[in-house]
Figure 1 (spheres, rainbow, N blue to C red):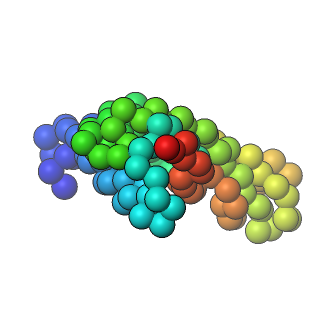
Figure 2 (figure 1 turned 45 degrees about the vertical axis):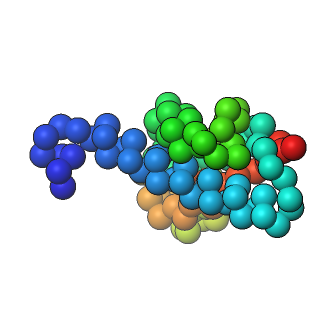
Length: 127
């Protein structure tokens, strides 16, 4: 992969966030067609802690992608959703800061993620 060869991993991350914001714009435009609004003032996103999304790159990408759209000058609000899982061995609920968590109850690595992997448009403030 080019980014790994020349040390430009940051460029790859930014491209990932740019692609995500293009999808968010599509969601906004589809909602505008269905609901008849013409301007977006604020966008609330929920982003899972385990999503591997860089908030700073996401904000930069948001501003770039929303330019000259109905969401131009809209404010981006980001709410982080904590990572959670369930131990397959003992059924214990596990708080997850990363994907390599160990069950605090039984020591198993067999943890199934139950929250924190998603990104979704939670709310739009529109005119």
